[in-house]
Length: 112
Image (cartoon, rainbow, N blue to C red; front, side, top):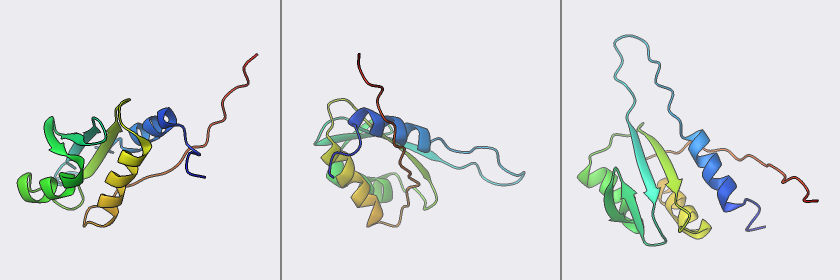
């Protein structure tokens, strides 16, 4: 049950679902988009700043002062594991920040 999604598929899903809708009505502030790249199981890059993955939410809140309602793009690198991605998502679930997520189930074509 744990590995229902292929890591490559997971990367595709996060990339597709994290695209921000930027067409806004006049007078509204544009929605900020913060990119978080999971470099490996220990380090993440938040807007190109290396931060321990366990401290990403605190960095967003305390250092970058990111407001609630900000859109996040979470991009796992090839060196990162499913578990590292799951731990980062769990941090967001326990915080004031919200992630919009969905799952796509794609069957691989049979190999001849």
